[in-house]
Each structure stands twice: as C-alpha cells, then as structure tokens.
Amino acid sequence: MQISYFGLSSFKITGKESTSIIDPFGKDSGLTPPRGAADLVILSEKGNELYSWTSGFSGEPFIVNGPGEYDVKEHTITGIPVKDKNGRVITIYLIEVEGIKILHMAHIEKLSLSEDELEDIGDVDVMLVPIGANGVLNSDEAAKAVNFIEPKFVIPMHYKMPGLKIHADTEEKFLKEFGNKHEKMDKLTLKKKDLTVEQPMKIIILEPLR
Image (cartoon, rainbow, N blue to C red; front, top):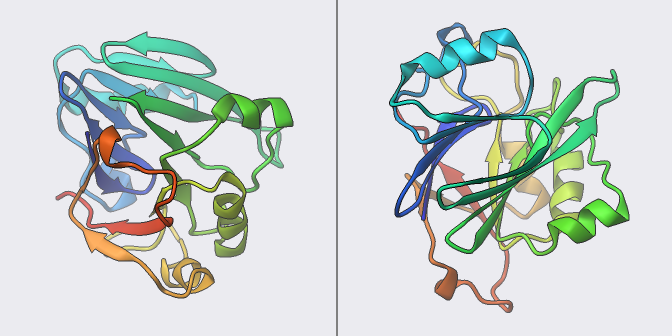
C-alpha cells in the first residue's frame, strides 16, 4: 500500500487492486489539481463544487461523501461526522486498506471525539493531520491530536507550500513540537507485516505530486 500527497488535504492511496483519492481540489488553490485513474473519491465536506473536481479522474470512481460505512473493493471506510465551531459538519475518515488503518482528519479545527468514537477508531497506523491553522488545526492542537491518537506514522497536511494561494502556516511549527524529528520522502510504502507494536512514532513529510 502506498500513500502519496497532492497538497492541502488531498492524498492518493494505492492498494493492490484499487486507488482512492481524498479531497481533490481545484486550480484556484494555486496548486496542480489531482488527476489520473481512481476507483474511489473520498470527500470530507459536502458541496456541489466538489463534484466538479472529480472530473479529472478517468473511469467512474465511487464517491464517498459523508458519514457511514463503505466497503468498496479493498477499501473499508468509516465516515465519522464532526462539527466545527461554526456548526459546519465535516467528515473524518478511518480507511483500512490491506489491513493498514489510515485516519484522515479532514479540515477540523479542534479534535472532539467521544469515548465511543475513539474506541471504534482503535489503533491507527497512519494519521493524516492538518497543521496549518486558519480554518484547520494549528500546530499546537495538531500535536495534541497526534499525542491523543498515538499513531505509528504521522503525515502532516494542509500547510504552506510553493504556489498555494490559501493562507496557511508552514510545517516548521508543528515539527518543532516533536523536536524536528522527521523524514522526507516522495511516497510512503507500507505492508501490514512490517508494522510492529513497539516501533516508535515517525513523522513523514511527503513531497507533493506534480
């Protein structure tokens, strides 16, 4: 299983039999919109304009848009509704591919989950967490969320990068919360058999796809 990053909160998850795209965005962001083949498109917010952003994908991808449980090809997806401080409902997703559990934190500004929801999430292998403030978690709240969930891998998202027109903090503040210990790579490749309970948490900065 591989995880690649487009920018903002958008990722590509590639399994043996299927590919999913999370939170595609438009060219008005200043970044190159996600393109290519996709079996699933996962949207953390509802809005008609979001569907227009799926037009760049070949095939007829299944659209996941909101709370609920979905079982599509090798993806098992649980959408969990979360209200932000303005009452807007955002869906965070627990995605399981090849036995690896990925938690996508969408555009939340503060982690607010009940004990039952946390129990349902269980152990997380990879946490995709926004860190750029200005509408999403800031570095301090993101660090608290990471320490609360305790994933094996953390991939920051929604932070300042070249070309981005949306205001966001850089990744530096978040990395300082963890002593600047991190690795940079083009994509994260994982196999379930390689994950161990004892391994220390790793922070991965992914280079955006172009």
